[in-house]
Image (cartoon, rainbow, N blue to C red):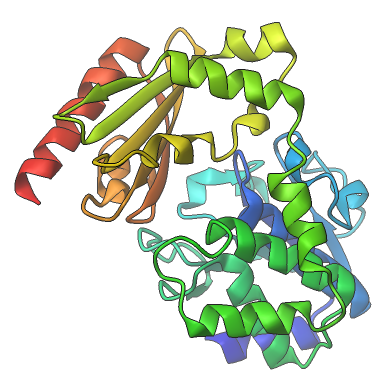
Length: 321
């Protein structure tokens, strides 16, 4: 399948690159890395987001080229390239209006991905979707630039937790070395990602820890934030990116859960596991998805009902594990 995608990238000219709602580092890194590489090849390409660009990734090249409306590009795409999107309904903005005349290439590493594209390159072995983008570009024969490498390295760093998450192998570090070869300073990337948070993020972390509950005999750390918390301190939702990881860091905790209440009956949930519990299964029960150790949900449900449902599902998973 990678050969087919590489052939399309070499021979075709018009590409629209998209990713998922509430994009993380892998999504943004994949989106910008693929877009910039296509532009370097002389293709007609557009990178499209349905959400505000996350402040955490403001340092990445190509940010200013991002489009935010599905009618804002000035060519007819022959292919939509969907990157890091576990399910078609999580592509943003809605691409259904183009699907009749445009082929969809689905490139992803989520194990829950059903293969919704016309062409699918879904590889569960990959630490990040940026790894798969690199493999495609390598197969095309495109020489990695500083700009593309910076974007792809950002996705790899964020989805591996700066190389501390499970699944990191010697191959991961070999890929990191290849991405740095154009002359990228690794610290300049990780500094932006882990040492340049907005002051409001510290306040969000304090609020999250104030709301902390330790449940299921100390194996579940659960907390919540409210959209009003963000509004009061002038923080964007993207500033809470990966805050949930703090909930997993306590000895004895197997699962960390952060619920963000967006409205009276709409919540966003981030789940993290040390591996005993497959949180992608928990997420899929509520319409979400992800990986064994990291998953997410966006669901219409009152927060108290959602909390009870999550505790029940996680508790049952722990009993059966």
